[in-house]
Image (cartoon, rainbow, N blue to C red):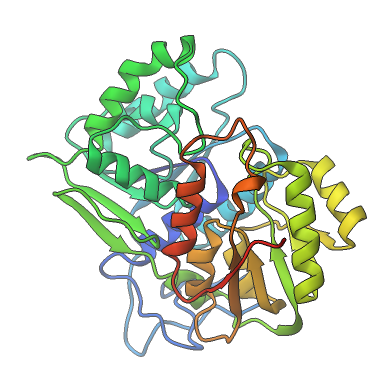
Length: 376
C-alpha cells in the first residue's frame, strides 16, 4: 500500500499526478478521458468520463490511501475538500484527519496513523519541511519515500539535501527559538529518513528543475493527469494576473506589491486577479479598490482552474510555483505565461538574506515563460 500525507491542495494534486504516472496507468490521449474501466463519473468541466483508455484495455489504479492532515485556514480546507472529491472519483481512499484540532490532536493523530505507517510499503509526502510530517517520518524506518511537489519549496529541499544542510524554509531567517531547539532532534531524524540508504529508496516527483544528490531518483511531473481530465480551456483576449503570498510570508512590502500589481494590470490589460489561498482578505480588498481588478478566490489549485477555463491569453505572475507548472498544464493551448521579477527594493528589512537569490532562481530556471522587468 502507498500511504500519502498532504497538507495543501497542491500537494494532493501532485499526489494524483504521481499515481497517474505510475507504471500501468492509462495512456494520456488527446480527447480521450483516462478513466479506469468500469467506473463512471463526471469531471468538474462536465466531461463524460465513461470511455475506457483504449479498445480492449483495462487497468487498476495505484493502491493509494491519502491522509489529509487538515490545516486550519478556511481557504485551504475548502480547496482540500474539493481535491479530496477528485481523489475519491479516481478510486483512491481519502482519510480526513483533524490533525490540528486542539492540544491533544497531534498525539491522537500519531496513535491512529501508527498502524497504517507500519503496513505501508511506500510513504508519499508533500512537504518535507512540515514539522508534522517530520514527526511522522520518525516512526518509519525501511520505507521507500516519495516527495511530491509542494511548490518552489521542492527546489530548496533538494538543494539542502544535496548540501547536507538542515531543512529550513527559504523565507525563514533561521532563528533558533525554544520551539526549534525542542524539535531539532525530530528534524535531524526526519532528514536521515529522507536520505537514501541500502534499504530505502527516495524519489522526488517534481516539475521543478532540481539537481538531486546521489541515490535520489527524480521523476518528471508533466501534469498528464490534469491535461487528461480537464480542458482544453476557452481562451479570452485579456490577461489574468496570479497572486502570491510573498506579503503574508514577510518577504515583500505590501505597498510595493500593490503598486506593482496595479502597474502590471495597466500595462498588460489584466482584468482578473487569481488570489493565492494564503492571501489576506484585507490585502485583497485593497487590491480591488486601488487597482480595479476582479478578485477571484479559486476553489481548486490554479493549474486545474486554468485548464478548465476560461483563462486569459496571457497569464502574469510574480516568481512562484505557477511559472513552472502552468506551461505544463496549458501545453498546446497557446496561452502565454509571463513572470515579473521582484525588485530588490520591494523586499522588507525582515526578509531572509536568501530571499532575493531564491526568487531570482525561481524565475531564471522557469521554462517556456516570458520574462518581464519589475515595474518602475
